[in-house]
Length: 319
Image 1 (cartoon, rainbow, N blue to C red):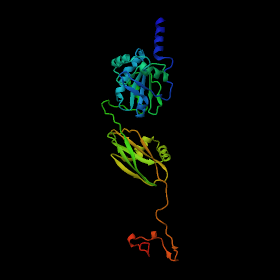
Image 2: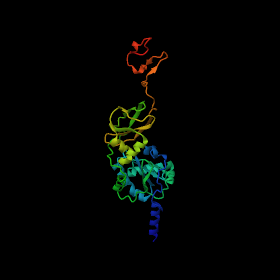
Image 3: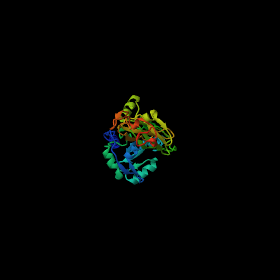
Image 4: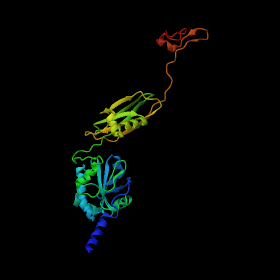
């Protein structure tokens, strides 16, 4: 009976009274891992990666059993170079203890100890069970509040793939495709812009539309903005200058571009707002017939086309 009580207490210490992070939206944090590298959560998310966080502590038995499986999935998902970025956070362990932990279990991703910020982060995320593995999307939404039990590495991989993340080879280089937009000229019904990709951008899709138009088109197609631009936008590669015509005067438009790397992975959408100039009257005087002060009928000069050199004092209009 005593052994059973002891076992139950040990399990309670490992798993806690609740088995998940209760938050739905991520809270930003900046901390330094046990190897001296600063980790800023929202910077990673803003870069387009999902973030997997394993909350643990080194003397937690279930953590010791789960970590090798999480590490194996880390290698299968591309070693923090592709869709997902792994990190682990302890609520109590020193940097030295975390370094020893990393060496023992082959952890290569950031490990944040308790005194280095881990304690505060665990409190913020209201972690009451260890291990607790969560997944955060780039839009800050917590998609997985508690991945448990972790039977093997495939458990983690399957959970990530259900959210659209893909496996990658760790030896495959990581690309960061980008494209910039420069507005060259703005007229009443035309806008000229230049698109300049960086070295990692193999191609891109671009278009110009009002906010209402792009929202309507995305809704009809059932696609988010990056996929819509890539599917229906004008294709580009290298530096391109394009003139968008048939625009409405004095109207706000957005120029959109989405870059892609050599593997077809889409980068961050670039949006450049621009407002066409107000419409004005014609530069050409309308035709009319009038009588001058001497009573002579005359037509305006603009109705006669000739060279200014033929004008005379008696005939101020070209003939």
